[in-house]
Length: 289
Image (tube, rainbow, N blue to C red; front, top):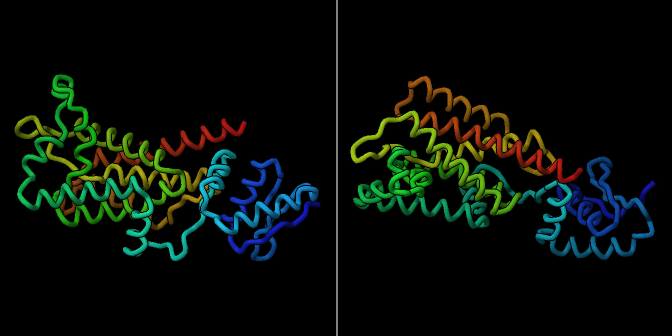
């Protein structure tokens, strides 16, 4: 039987410490006892060294080295922030702590503000999607991302940024900025390209669609599927939220809402997010083997 080292009242810190100890050649596991999660050493000979590491962990449990060890082991977990939830205050706080989430958030706000000040026409001229035949000639490939930053109403931008601020920050804090950047670039490109395929351009060879919705559906699908495939990584979504977003997607196709929905972008974004989560999970499994 192993030697108990330290007990936590939450599962995440126990697994973070156990993963880090294992990365330091001190084999450790987590056992649940009543409402506590106990870090247990497989070899009592390592107790003294493990105690020093545990004390250091308690001093600064959010140090990146612990999350890195968890990531390397394929068991990514994240310390849950206190008071987390769906309130506006918590969403804003999460976004501030996640740089890339904040950059996209602020760019969307800046573009929308400039649009309100009468600059929508020049912004649209340079950011809206164009037919692929035109892009092949002018090479303005940033237009594959550009529509994500354009919003057409206050409700449109508030809805998208609330979800982006919550889910984007959650991914960035758990898996890092690079992972969220990949999800954003892939989903924005795919969702905008898909919407262009199923839309007709307006004057000046521009498609009049925009918004972060495709990316929002992607981060939702990403968190949803990772919560199912890798629950120990600390990413998940309540079934009620998933259900709401899927119903909203279906209503868009039913064409009974008071707004025009970019259905192709939403669907393509959701699928791309789910596929990215599956690829990440599969890659982690192969790395462990």
